[in-house]
Length: 522
Image (cartoon, rainbow, N blue to C red; front, side, top):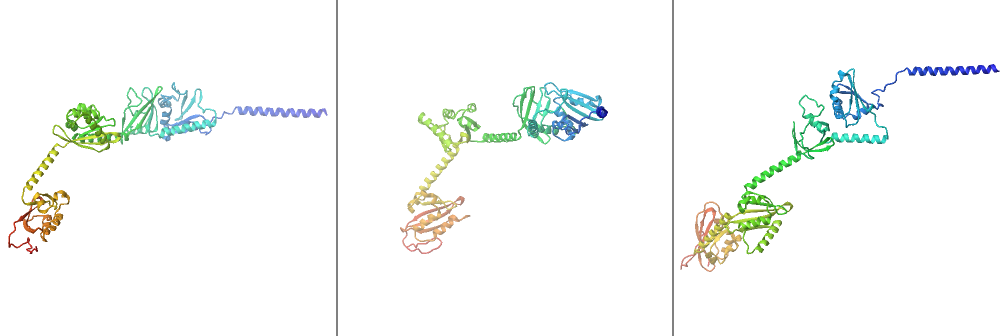
């Protein structure tokens, strides 16, 4: 029995030793295998690594692609230089020397996030690895939702900046451009000489003055398609300056159109013979033309000083260029009425000045409570009107002194003149209602006050007939028995003169009509 237990115990010990030996051999064999190196092409890799063939990006880790600005892979190296150039100022030069030196390690400049960029030249390819401090740059550990939100915010902000129509860039204190958005890069590429590619550092599109202000004057950018105008805004941020160029083409076009319109308007006002004065809502003179100074005899220096409306009228009164009222109180009332009626658009007066001139003054309201006054010298017009009226009165007095009844008709058959003898003969004065006194209405009147005759039809045709006409005579018998001789004579301009002369009665003389020779019944 004791021998059997010894045999079993020996077998267990032998099995245990065999198992331990196997484990030790397996562990020794596994320790001799090389450690697995994470592949660059492994999508689960969190390292920030780029692999370039010249300027073309062959591959990049997922975390590296997040950091690379958007664009085509053909210009990936330029985009990488634009992204990390501000942090590593000599990055472009070190990469150019990489085939000669084999590898390089760059430290970010002071003030930026502490990073190390390791560049390696491997069989014609360039591998760039970003590290933070002494360890490779890895995403921060923490809440996954927070990290996703931050990543989404970064993508959104990058999209906004790249699609913004406003030119944005960042400059250092020495004027070097360390960052620019998509709109800036587009114009920078368009301005490059033919055959030249955009490289780092970026070219300057706008020359800023030494004393930078928060808002600078408008600047023009001469593009191949034509000039583009921008309003520049600078926002200092520590040692750097954020710059914005807002498109101002439409504003420039509007200002140019307004300036040309104002120039045209100014030239038009300068040539007007009418004096123009425009007062703003506070009744200060804002605009006037040279004719105003000539008509009012006010000094241009006084007008340039923008006097008030009351001061302007007081100065005109001192120059005797306003009708003088009986007293000063009525003068002030007149000024108040002038302003009130002008603001309502109904002020229009004729001023007879002490010097003999006659002015027509019109006041009209303008937008925003402004007032416009126009002064027109109508002295010559009034003189011609007075002379015309005097001539008419003289002509009327001349034909009134004629014993024969006279009626003058225009080419259209309208009565333009008659005398007292006509009114006494026909028992009415047609000049009371000249608008209704024409050859048709007057022939009706004559027909009603005379014996029947065809002469009035011939008279109507004669007065209204155009062309050359021969003078002719006729006779009519009034209802009171008087015989009247009628004479029809053409005048210049198609007018007609008709005279009526009562004849002395003759015993035994037959009554005859013009042309018809019809016997009239008494």
